[in-house]
Image 1 (spheres, helix red, strand yellow):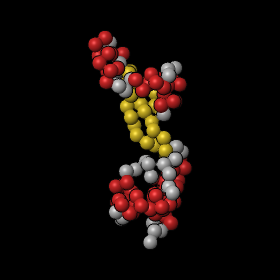
Image 2: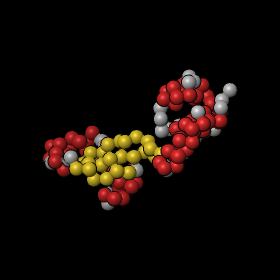
Image 3: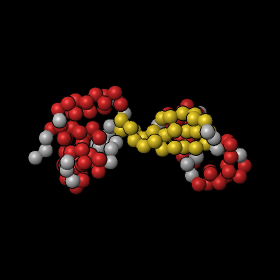
Image 4: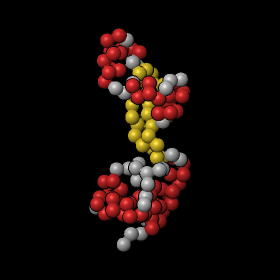
Length: 126
């Protein structure tokens, strides 16, 4: 039997935390968590993928692909090109100090404040 806070915890963290971590927190197996997520219709719409963009050692911007591209004044396809082996080879030969590095920071809650408030409420009920 699943408790309401367990379902809320899965809804809040699915797509942000690995299934293994969610299962450990709930004291359930990974298969049980995956099954409940699917049966409950929980979606990964509470997250966004973020990146950090560096030129050499200098941090230029942190945000989603679109946010980073907009702030740098480049196309998203150009930003994606910076993550390819072709770009790395090309720039290492010519100007390694000008190389743009795109670091995948993983998935983050869309609204971090609301995420942490809800997490506190769930933890209070446990």
